[in-house]
Image (cartoon, rainbow over all chains, first blue to last red; front, side, top):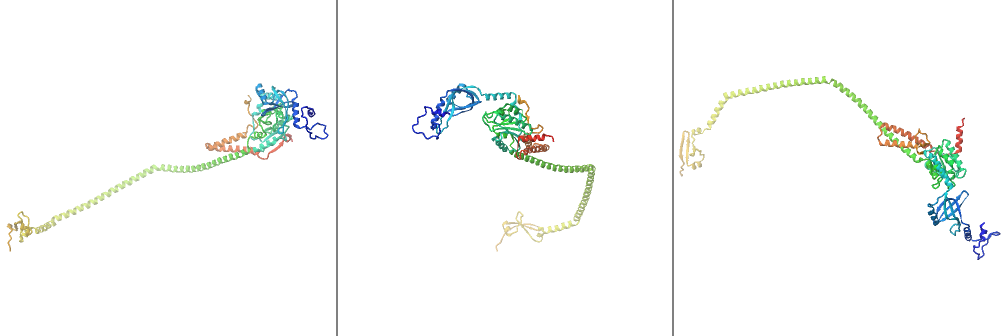
Length: 473
Length: 86
């Protein structure tokens, strides 16, 4: 439509050389070089009158030089761009940067970037000014409903559910051909869970979605077998997720008798279903983990470990029981022995006094007998010894008397004779003379007599003094 | 306000949940490991622990076979058949 218009543009450069051949038999002018055509298009678009537009900001994003977003309403949209310096001025004026969903009035006009050999072309509404017109209708309506549900306590009802740790049956509402189904199954498989899944396939993004999901949730909960329900889809833009902000659906979920896990959006787009549900997950994988809170693979190992520990303790108890049993038997034997021993001891003790007296009496009698016998033996011994001693004395006395009477006189005579035999007088009587010095000492040699000079000569009948005179021969 | 309302539960209140059973078993093991339990208590705890762990293992075994998948319509049809008196 624009080509004929552009064909008439005076700005198109005059062809200095012959243009290449066009499509044969085509009534259209050209061919023109695309760059020239793009430049002409930009000029033409820029010639459009600048206007003001009203709509909601969607997909707001900042690039290095410009800020981009779409301006939408129920019937259409247009891509918009603002130079960074203009955006900063707008933000400074309105106080805070506009966000997705904001209802705004824009001032500006059409622009076209013709691109180049290495960059893509693009159309945009070049914004020169912006004014906040109020929150977007869509988001404002959702926010109003959120507050209403919250005021009725419906946002909290599902939160009070105690989710089963290990459900046997899980109901899942999702698109039949969506990737969410595979992700969910993979998440459950990673948990080691292999229970029962009841699939309730439903559209998840058009106007039929909310009623179908509501009906499926009612059927799942009504079955009485589903312990937890998951509503899952792979995500999408906020507009795609509007069905999950349906009032009837949200009220149904809030009043449901089973906990619902919502996994319909992502971090940036939060639906009312996320607020109403018991748990909100960003991905189907997380939803699987929330539905089966127990890691079954690990739990199997833990059960084994616990069972082994219990068996170990039971074994200890058995050992202790055996030990106590043996001790009890030993105690019983010991008790029996003790009783018998005590009985014997008692019997002995009962006889003990008389036996003791008897033993003592016998011992005294024995001692008495021994003392008497000892005394008799000692008396007899003494008597014998005395008799012997008396006999010895008598014999000694008799012997002494005999000696005194007979032997002693003879002995005296003999001794007298012996003495007499040694008397010098007797020798003198036989004619011998005893030479003595004047002092009476005997002179037994000639030399002694020569030396003495004077001699006393003793004869049997008297003494004679003499002098030694030697005559020479 | 709503936080004061009782917690909803999906399991019958008479039976302890899997989580409570596991917690009780752990408590039993701790008590047994402490060596402070008397013989009577030890025997009682072992019996209780065995029952609980068997129950937990039973619950785990119920979701340890092959994954069973059925569509909601099939479930509804089966429930209707079961509800219809013969």
